[in-house]
Length: 321
Ligand code: ACO
Image (cartoon, rainbow, N blue to C red; front, top):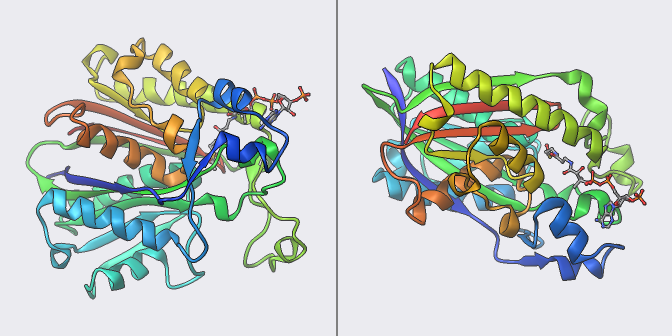
């Protein structure tokens, strides 16, 4: 038994923040942001708009694309680091929005690798016969936890959601997923406050994503390079067999470095960072849905998905769409 993606969907908030808008907030400029990151603009939530709002829109589109009803869903697995509430979790809030009851619904935190983690977990449920229609989502509103006075991070992050519906299949589908983490890198990329720390920094107005960008960059390129090589080797697949690389959209230079490692021309890489920014757990399913809906990603093609995020956490999936 395998799982396969039966449908994809995504959603971006309506409000757009351009690099010119950011020039009014911090000492930065369009040229620096574009050349260092590849980002021109990004979508951001407005007051009152939540991660579950974005996840619901993406989920409904994925259900429609898969030709299934909310009532068919028997598992909801959401990768997010920016839940609406401490509890209930985003999966449960989404279940309520969809008007369904009883199925397992949860969220897991793996920063930007959240969707790959959610996909890896849901794939196992389907393979084991414990789910027949799994809704797998990556959704984040990272702009809610960005320090808008820190030019080295606030120009990077954005909001969005992407979703897939997984169903059982006799042939893959998802060929393999590879999930990893190394907590020794905690201090290179983190949000240094939380529930059990008492939110003291947040109350004092001193919280916000902290990142040693240069060091993150080096580890990300090296780690993702090894990950994609390992993913192909584990399946006896050569890079020339790949139709598309669908990478986490953190920085165009990281994406180009991984494409180079795979000897893949950029024409075979789905790149959305220019208009999406870094949407954290949403970035990979947003890129996948973009490629599916504009007709580049076709049924039967071989896709390599990868992501890297705070923790560090990282993961990949090789799949036949
Ligand atoms: N505008 C103008 N100048 C800036 C800005 C800005 N927005 N930000 C930093 N600078 C300046 C710095 O102050 C520094 O100036 P100095 O030389 O006078 O000291 C100079 O630009 C160079 O700074 P670097 O940090 O060395 O810039 P770098 O080329 O490394 O680019 C970046 C920074 C874009 C953050 C890059 O390091 C990067 O993409 N890192 C990886 C990010 C990532 O992959 N994160 C993981 C996923 S995110 C998640 O999990 C939530």
